[in-house]
Image (cartoon, rainbow, N blue to C red; front, top):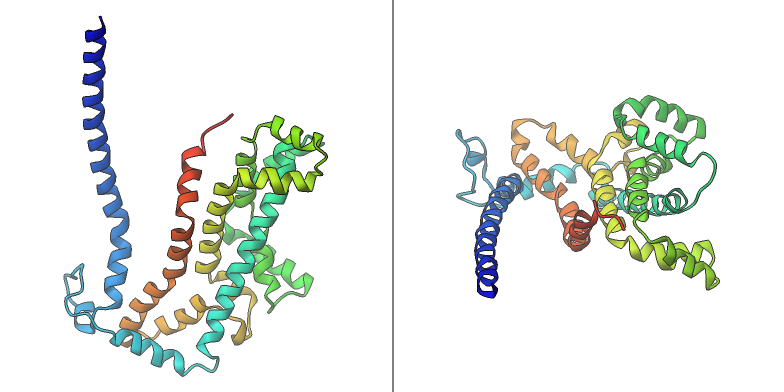
Length: 291
C-alpha cells in the first residue's frame, strides 16, 4: 500500500513538472509579446532616418545613432520656455497628484470597508457606478467646476481631479475588507485611536495594494496631457508630454525626434514599476483572497 502511494505521488510529481514546464513556456511566449512593443520603441529611438523610413520595417536597429536625441535637443532649445520647466511641471504634478490620490483613497476606504454608517452601501454603489463612466464625458462638467472655483490656468485644476478619482478608492476598499476585524478590535482595546489604527495596522496590511495604486496613478497622470490642454493656457505651466506633442507635429523631419519622445515618456513609469514590482505581484496574487 505504501509503495503504491509513493508511486502515485511520483507520477503526480512528474506530471506536475511537465505541467509547470508547459506553463512556463506559455508565459515566456506571452511575456515576449508583451515586451515586444517596448523593445521596438527603444530600437526606434536609435534608428537613423533611413531605417525609420524603410519598408518593411526592421525590428532591431542595425546602425544605431544618437542623431535623433540631438535633433530633439535642437527642437526644444528654440522654445520660449526652458525644457527643464516642462520636466519640473510633469514630475511635480505627477508626484503630488499621486501622493494626494493614494492618501485620500486610503483614508476614505477605511470607513467604507470597516465601519457601518448610514448610507455606506449607497455611497459605495455610487463609487462603483462612477467607474463605468469614461473620463472624456466628464471634461465639460469638470471645466465648469474648475471655472467656478477660479482654478483655471493653475495647478489645482490638474491636481484636484487626479486626487479624487474613484479607481483607487475602490481598490483600497476591496483590500481593506480582507483585514481581520479582530486585529482592529485588539488595537482599539489597547487604546489606539482610529487614526492610529489606520496608520499602524491598516496601512501596513495593505502596503502591496497602495504601492500598486502608486504605479497606476503615476502612470495615468504622467501620460495624460488632456487636463493640461483643457485647463492650462500659460506655457510655463504645461507638462512634458504636451510640450513634446508640439515637437511631434513637425512632420517627417521630426520623425526621429518623435521616436525619441516615445522612448523618453515611457522611462518614468517603467522606473516606478521596477521600484514597486514586488508589491504589484503580491497584490495580483492576493487580489481574490478573503479571510
